[in-house]
Image (cartoon, rainbow over all chains, first blue to last red; front, side):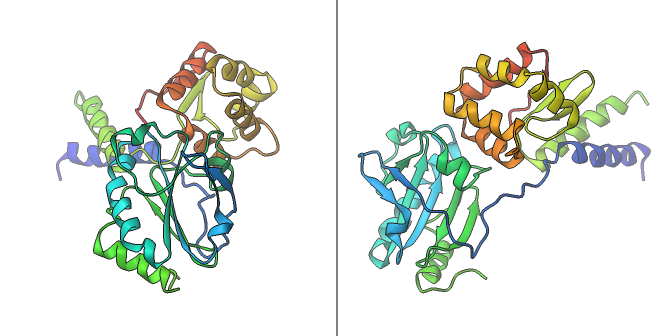
Amino acid sequence: MHRSTVIFFFCLFLAAAVFTPPALAAAPRINTPAPDFALPDTQGRTHKISDYRGKVVVLNFWAAWCAECVHEIPSLNALYDRLKGSGLIVLGISRDDSGHRDATVSYPLLLDKTGDVFVKKFTVTRLPETIVIDREGKIADVIFGSRDFGSPSIIEKMGGVLRGKARQ
Amino acid sequence: MRKFPVVLAGAAVCAVLFAGCGPTTFLIGKAGSYTNFGRDKPFFRKMLCERGELSRILANADLPQDLENDFYRYTCTKERSYDKVVSLYLFLTPAEKTRLKNAFKRQGYQVNSLPC
């Protein structure tokens, strides 16, 4: 092997050790009760999570400045429109609603002005982050990053949660 | 060996690309010591908490009072939590992130400029 190749991989190893962020410990744990909270939506109506017991709740944490977050909104609309009749609700949670001016949203958008839910209850460390809460109020799944929520695989997965088959 | 800096730079770029911008805050440095803002390191606890530099930095950053209080709480009190600081940093708008980094610089800290 060429000497510069060896040096490159050695440097790559060192650089990866420096730049790879350490793992975080506080991610929401699957099969544990979801924290309860109440937040107002953009219309001023208060939504309390425990009031949705018996439904599957999809909490989507997003931010106006997060392009990936805004990009997945149409697919969250599709998921909500497809399954709301089966007992699923989607709730967007953000510090403000300015990012939705360019996107039509069919589900409620909750405003977390102080970070009580974002930071203190769920300690969100990546955006977008989506938390699925089952009918019993337990966390069924945590999805990091943008997804196509209208895709057959996600619809099937949510169907499983609706039927009570949470991820083990 | 003349190629070494080029090879090192290339490896660093590759590492950043592969590692991505994961859940973290930003690097701060002072007097030859470095850490991620919010990590509990004795040197930075002394500088930021015991010497009161974080209070001055947060006051200069002009953040909403709730967030300013929370940054202090999760960095300098018994409720210290790196995860919470990461979450708070993520919660900031891009303009607030820039103001926070600039406030560190004005207090004599080196701050990394990676767009993470």
